Amino acid sequence: MRTEIDVLVLGGAGVDTIVHVPQLPVPFADSHMIRPGIVTRAGQSGDFVALGTNALGLRTHHLDLLGDDPEGDLVRALHREHGIGLTAVPQPLGTKRAVNLVGPDGRRSSLYDATRAADTDRLPEATVRALAGVSRHAHVVITQPCAHTLPALRAAGLTISTDLHDWDGSNPYHEPFAHQADLVFLSTTALADPERTMRRITERGRARIVVATAGADGAYLLADGELSHVPAAVPPAPVVDSNGAGDAFAAAFLYAWLNGTPPLRSALHGTVAGAYACTVPSTRAAGIGRAELSARVAGLERSEPAPRACPATRPCGG
Image: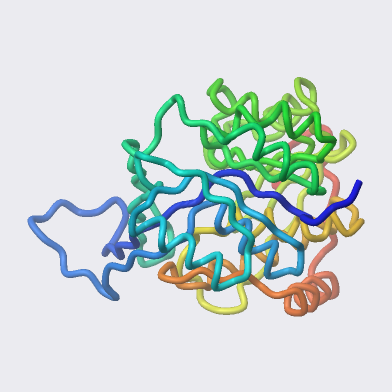
């Protein structure tokens, strides 16, 4: 098959307004003086994955619904600036937007505007099929229109990845994504038993690789039935914002994996890129470059204990 696109990213285009707050949760008060200020910039989950894979040299194209509005203009400008292909389907309700409250330690709380989407939203099947026909891999963001693209992506023979983010392991909304993808990312944040959820994904769906990111505790990788713990990378600069760290992890993992790197070493690429993302101020969007990623992965392999298989009698990290 002739490919023009290495990674087709579906969904997750939008704009965030960044508000720095004195702490999370925000203390009740009539007013707060905010520094370093309030900034609106393009960049939601799909944008960040596309930015990351593009920065690493993968031919990347992004497909999503966008409004004819100032927020949509910001998203289009971000893609032009970084040379990322974009197919924008008109969205009469407007471009997705959110407010991110960012604490001094880099943690965030996101407020999403639910008025800019409808249950009837769809990505045109003909457009999906045309782009899939010249693509190697699809990364599907868990927005509602993207669920309907999964059959067409499967029919095109692409490998598929998705990020379930803070799934609790039981919300049925996430299941089509979890069960149709070959590679599943998620966070351990809302999981009482990460290993159980990871194994259930492989038992009920197509995935043979599941990665659960755990922040400062690194990540857990389930590949070919074996669960391993991958240590966290040390951020190269002070942590200022965790926004986009999971997307950076996914982008770097995909870069390594699509270039034939085994899953365990691909996860090392992910931890390095995720740590780097935490040092990027929330007011801008930037992905780690290929040379720096490779150098930091090599340094991590020299200085840190190797990723280890988890004993069957107790969970990783225990």
